[in-house]
Length: 509
Image 1 (cartoon, rainbow, N blue to C red):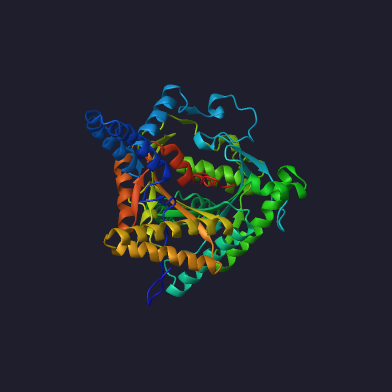
Image 2 (cartoon, rainbow, N blue to C red):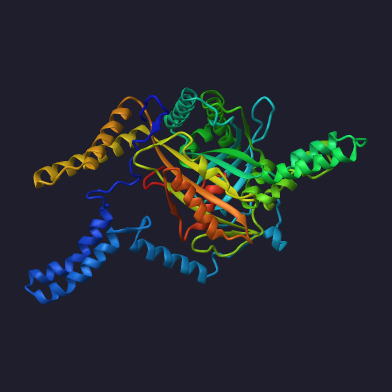
């Protein structure tokens, strides 16, 4: 983080998995060494013709293992394509909901496709002064527990630099507090920009319009409502807190065990997170979702056009308790999801394209991703999810120490070999030194990932809107990377507020 007379620029981040040496991992070096072993054995046996014949093959294998293409090596591309082909041939990628097939037995059971298939929801014990019952989300695939909150924030568009700095400091304090508890594994912040359906405005008009008003006033009001609804957008924001089973099991046993025991432990974390959100971060309200609220959030993630009906039913339910206003969890997912395409995902009558955002070396100011959340046409939905993974102090110290050792080793090899030390090498060394200093001062090390998505009706060209999304990311100063061959998982990460999508680091508990 660098301060100046203008806004604060946040940076000094490093790669998620830095290369062991020369930018390559130990596995890549082992693969290159094994590929060149036949050539070395042939040369040792003085079979020079065989050694020369194997040299081009070894060079090709080294390029396939070492040179990345759109974020992945050629070997990884081949492996992912093979997995996708096998899954498609065996019919693993086609999905239909039990509710659509007429086989749903329990409407409280979540029925979601892909990486969300292991999700199960439970109503927790009463929480807070209003005795609300937040829903506790169990992911049996990843063995995690999560809670979701809908937040309201005034935004930073009209905030001064000092106010933005204060909010950024509040977010840093929130993440440092999560790292110090050593319970939270992921905090996911999701923001949606979706077309305004006008459901609340229509309900208010139906309750307040005067029947004796002149016909011209009625016509003008209806025309203004239609124009405003077509041109308006809505913003939704969610915060998801994820806790692994291994970290919560002992405390949950002391709190009574079972789902209620885990919920009681989560309630303590929720209180700390809520205090930080309402305080330094500047949120005006934090509402922990119950089962109907989470089902509505998931449903509108898959089908943005369903929000109008859900909002109208909820408003009508307040006036007439006999109306079934809540959406069951079994109907939260899509009715059908065919095999995902290579570069986009089809769910019901909607298409979505998702890409991840690569952070720039020069850093970024707060609010730099605002153009990514700005739709380019009426009816387009944009989503962005930022995953924060607080890393414990012991593991962070080990990671920074290993990176510092690798940086010093590379610098020493360049010096002894007489190679020129370029500015990028000095910058990387200074970055590692800065991380070590900040870690010694008590700051937390946080792993960050960003996924953004665009959703349009199925009759629109998703290829065109995918290019528009990438252009928005590029115009914001970042670099987009389309998540090819994994669009279903990418969509779940960017559009569904369940905290699922950030791959686990090896050895993380």
